[in-house]
Image 1 (cartoon, rainbow, N blue to C red):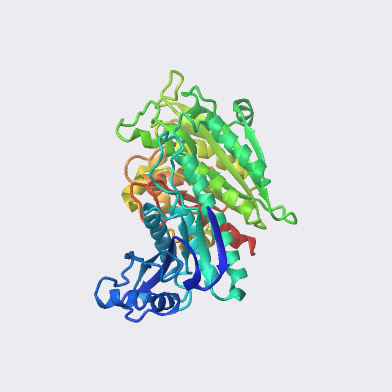
Image 2 (image 1 turned 45 degrees about the horizontal axis):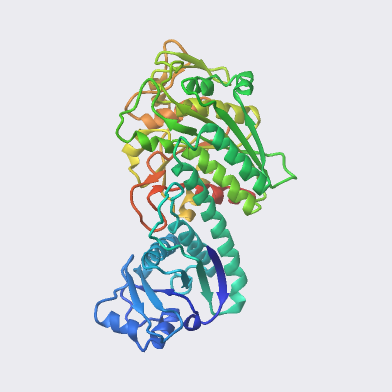
Length: 500
C-alpha cells in the first residue's frame, strides 16, 4: 500500500473516497470538512440538520459526491466530544474508516489529519497516528487461504495538507507511524502463523532474514551451546518435543559511543500443549500464539532499525515447543537454570517462566541493563485485568513510570501490578530453591516474582500480555487475531532512552 503526504486542496483530490470529520454537536462544519460541505452545496450541513449526522465517536456516514468534486465519495467520521478527543482516537477512527471503505470496494483513499487544529493535536503527531491507524487497521492474515478473498486491497492512502510548508513535518510523522505499524504487523504475522509453520527453527530463520534486511546482528544458539551455557530450564521444557529449541540473540547498535546495552527478552513457546500437565482441548489451537512475546521483541528490533534509534538493544528469544512426548518434563522434576538456581516443576504448563529464567540469567551475565521481558505468561493476568489492559511488573519505579508514559503515548492500556514480598511464600519449595508456580491465587504476581529471582538487582520490567495478545473482534486499529500489543509502547520507551 502506498502511504504518502500530498500538498493539495482537499476539494481537488482525486480518489475513490475522502475521509473528513465532525465533532459531536458541531452544527456548522469548519476547516476541511467545511470546504467539502461548501463544494457539495451544503450536503454535510443538511445531514446534520436532519439528524442523520451527529459526530458521535465511531459514527461513519458515507456521501456520494455525484461529480461535484473529484473524490467519488466522502466519508464523514464522528470524532465524539471535542473535550474528550485524544491522539489514540485519531488512530482508532482511521482504522475503522479505512476498513469500512475497503468493505465498499474502495481502492484509493485520501484523509485529513484528524484532530489537528481545533482538536488540539499537533499536525505531525496526527499524521503519525493516521498512518498507524491505516496500516494496522487494514491488516489481514490470509497467507494460507487458497480461494480469492472478497476484500479489495487498498492501494493508496493519501494524507492531504493544503499548506506545502507543513508537508515535511507531516512526512516525518507519516514515516514514523508507518515504521511503528509495520513492526506491529510483522509481529502479528508471526503470531498468527500456524505452529506447524512457526516452529522454533523457523522462528530463528525469520530472525536471521530480518536481521540481514535491517542490518541487525543475529546469532542463534542450538541445543549443544545451550547445554554448555547451563540453560537447563529451557532444555527441560524442550525435551518433550521433536522440534529442537533455539535461543535467538539479535542486537541493534545505534549508539556506538556507549557500551550500555538494554536487554529485551520474549517468550517464544511456538506451541504450548501444557506438556504432561496438559491443557483442555477446547481452545488449545490458540496456543500457537504463545510465542507472542518473542515476536514482539523481534518487531521492536525491526522498528528500532528502521527508525535508526540511537540506543543499543539486544533481544533474547528462547524458542521451543511444550509437548508431552516420551521424554517430556514431569511434575516433580527439578531443573537447574543458567544462574545455578534450582526449580521444582510442580506444573509443566508453567513453562514460559522456565525458559525466561535462562533468558534473564543470560541478560544479567552479559551485563544488560535495564532488562525488559514480554510474555503471554499467565491466565491469571486475564482474570485480573481482562482483555483490555496488559499487566506490568517492575523492580525499578522510574523505569515503570517511563513505561507507563510510553504506553499512554501509544494508546495502549498498561496497569502496574504489585510485587509484595509476602507472595514469595507461595513459590517456596521443599526440594529445590523454588517452585515454578505458586498456585491459583495471585498467579500473575507469583510468576513475576519467580522471574525476579533470575534478574536479582538489575533494573527490570515484565509485561504479561496473556490477556491482550489476541482479539476476537475488530475495533479501531485492532483486528481479529494477534494484536501486536506493546510493540509501539516499547519502541516509544526505547526512543525516550535514546534521547537521554
